[in-house]
Length: 109
Image 1: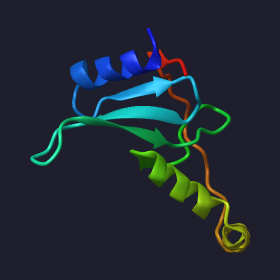
Image 2 (image 1 turned 60 degrees about the vertical axis):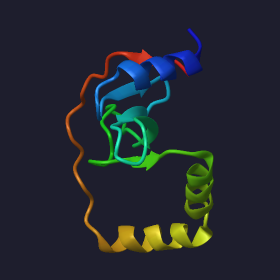
Image 3 (image 1 turned 90 degrees about the horizontal axis):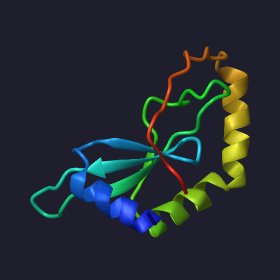
Image 4 (image 1 turned 90 degrees about the vertical axis):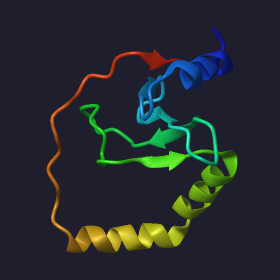
């Protein structure tokens, strides 16, 4: 089954807010419920995982189209962000990591 067919099946048969893992670590699909103004849709949830396979953040970044992805790429590649994060790391204490979790049903990309 092609990716587009799998996505159509997921949007048609998936549950509201259901997550589906992909073969790319830290990248999941989320089925968004329909609203008054739009039908049910899908979004990509990007939340990198640590060495134990645990998501680094409680919530990831939800991306619904190529324009949003491009905007995040431009922002993340800004050199001033590197300067800011280095300063933050000097000020903030180091954080502990959480326990690993298993993820079944993976969509191969």
